[in-house]
Length: 203
Ligand code: TMP
Image 1 (cartoon, protein in one colour):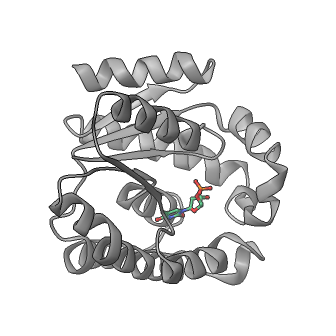
Image 2 (tube, protein in one colour):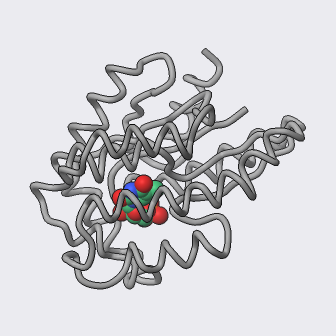
């Protein structure tokens, strides 16, 4: 099974990835957790180029290319081999972040996204996607509090208008792809949010 977590900045995805993995492991499942951009040394190197530095250092089309280059490496070396041996893969961000951040909010070419989807992602579509939803103003405060990852703030610095578009695009996506994507209210404690996610998964 392939599960992904999506959402804007500071929605608590990483915590929820950890909590769901612990839960599934306690049920006896063999779980692999990973993240994008990243998951292999090559993809982590690209992540570093994407998430740090001036907001103007890449255009949205360039971000799209870099994210899919990282994704190709990640799929080939980590995700696909894990799924083949029957592991449950939980990934912090995946294809929907590219659509939302680069195309819907960033204005990158949908045609390019579609071609990259066909060429690089192919059949690797998640079984379940949890989209964590929170007011971007609250998310920004939470994200800013993570001082350890302050150098990774390039997307966080893209401004209020951009992050409002991200939120709307994620919720539109959840409405359009309602079989795969589940919008989760990310307000409340980590345990409360985890319970909402478990409820959807049990459904
Ligand atoms: P993270 O902070 O959730 O680890 O994600 C790093 C940043 O990368 C986040 O601001 C969203 C962005 N991102 C994209 O813009 N496109 C993508 O395809 C992915 C995977 C992440």
